[in-house]
Length: 274
Image 1: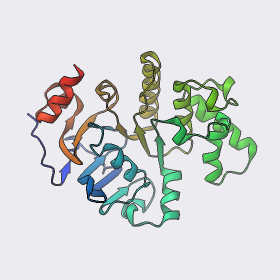
Image 2 (image 1 turned 90 degrees about the vertical axis):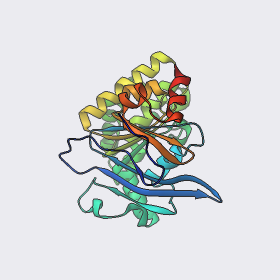
Image 3 (image 1 turned 45 degrees about the vertical axis):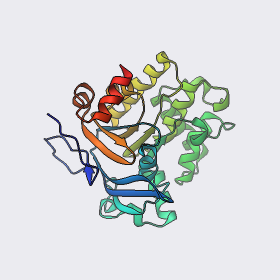
Image 4 (image 1 turned 30 degrees about the vertical axis):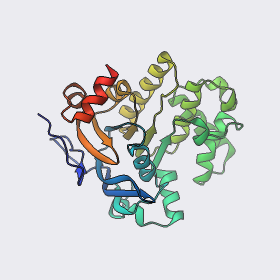
């Protein structure tokens, strides 16, 4: 039987058998906007090869938490460590300067946004979008950039014959594949997904989810997935945490939470989707 979690210091519990420390460890995250507390004392561990889903209504704080994990926003309290490179796990990423945070973002964190316009240059070629990330990381050879972009697009199951087409002429599903290829071009340890299948047809959604599952398995990615779609959460996530008004109200294994929710708010979310 899963017990509901208190908002104070809520932590999503790791599996019982753990052979290595978490790849991601965020503790006591607090993010305010004026008097409104968007994220209130939230902690989260994610292990390599694991997918953790975050669910909740609009305004629950899930997307704010994702932006903190992507180092886009600096919280008022908390710590954040990422075991993605030697000595990096010893460093609180929230204490880094702007340039250092940008370096971590580029090399160790990939992100796929709900709105492709946030992650892509819509008038660049698809290959150019992927190559841009490699260019920022220091690659200067045109041949190397193009070949690496081709490989990343192919891994994301993007049709290579269209790699020179700009995202603005592509379907929503193909735009998401370009985002995914760009996010994974430098083989980051952590992938952040913000409603990656919203607005896609069911058949296209299934194809994108299949690609995500394959890449997650092959690369042992740690993934944090924000979604309002409990079907997507059930398909991808190993564990899930439920947020409401900035707090984690319940967390645990995905099937347990979705099949036997204990908190009234989780029950409301699950029943609303039935």
